[in-house]
Amino acid sequence: MLTSKVKNALIVNKVNASKVTVTSKGGEVTLSGTVPTASQKAQAGKATKTTTGVSSVKNNLTVSAGS
View 1 (tube, rainbow, N blue to C red):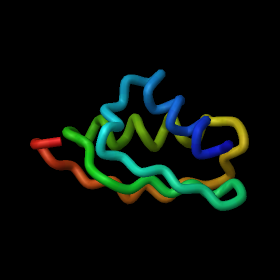
View 2 (cartoon, one colour):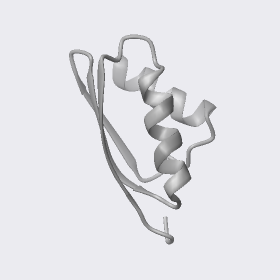
View 3 (cartoon, rainbow, N blue to C red):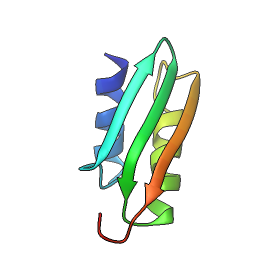
View 4 (cartoon, rainbow, N blue to C red):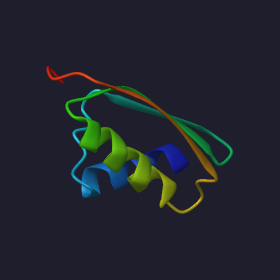
């Protein structure tokens, strides 16, 4: 459920999440995969942190211009 809420938050916040994997355990969320820009990485982290039910975020996203 939390994973779905975070994925939806990424879409709503216009993050290119096509290559982003979201996993959650309890309130801990891990973002992994690639995004096209550093600002997208930051936006993904911010969108995740503000999602109801999230207590911590591990933003393991990498920036790849080809994403």
